Image 1: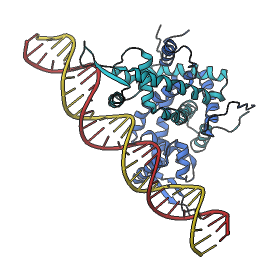
Image 2 (image 1 turned 90 degrees about the vertical axis):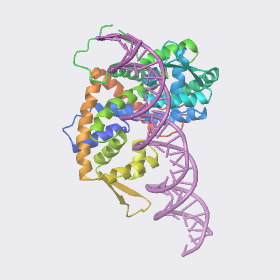
Image 3 (image 1 turned 180 degrees about the vertical axis):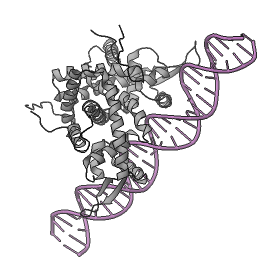
Length: 176
Length: 176
DNA sequence: CACCATCACTTCACTAGTAAAATACTTGTG
DNA sequence: CACAAGTATTTTACTAGTGAAGTGATGGTG
């Protein structure tokens, strides 16, 4: 049944020879998540490059576009898993290109709002559709069952990662 | 059954309102892979930081350590999904810190070999064990079934991504 | 209402990563 | 064996991202 073992299985096997006492099972998930992300990014970046965007810009404009209303930079930090400094820089660059605009919040003037422009919306709509198409091609090797299993499992993992940076205690029990 | 919908479900829902005609199902996998990778990286980087390594250095030393024998920079590029320039830089820095050494290949002198030092092996053994422990904690929220499903699905995806950078033709038809 | 801890964001100085050019070696080919 | 083409790696010039310090605004508290 096994074809070529993937690079992660191979790595686990090598570690087993050196340190048989270590439990490397977590690599099966985390190692693969990292490598899959790296390869997917590599492939998809060529598509975004055609539209004149890098992935960070794409993610930022997507978040703005789909949110409908202006978003604060602080919220963008969280959506992008990036530092505030990175967000500031990206917003400035995209604003210079006329893809979004910054508005000061009238009620709390520490805060700002970032809103996508019509030009930005046009661009991201086109880029988003193209990106989706490329994504579908990249996933062609997975069948429906595998997709469901992976998305379900990752959703669960995401929920446990999103909240606190501290590792979850043994009994979380968060009722809905 | 559904608790809090994760950020990816939410994003899909928003896109559906704006562009109901788009098939955004690929986000369920790819969106989650990207976000999970970003969050995992954020969490695990603190552990590596304690050992004086960043993730790239950790991955490079790990590859060297587990491979047993010296590795060419070219091979490291592939293992790390990085440019040759990045590999050169990292190898230089780690060599300066005495964690690895570079040897010229005697048969083909265009090529080089990178070998981990005893000092490097000690460091990575410690860092690797600590990293594994942190990984296990982060995965605590997933049960065995979910883990198996995710690792199996991602392994399949990885295999289809590893080979050719070219997008698959319309009729793949790869019998299992 | 002056004070000060906190917040939201930006600026600064720096590190890491990249693409493209450069370097150094190897491998045919006539 | 001279030479063109190809390979493996490094160097160069540049962009993107970060942590820490800085700026300006808010909101208790006495």
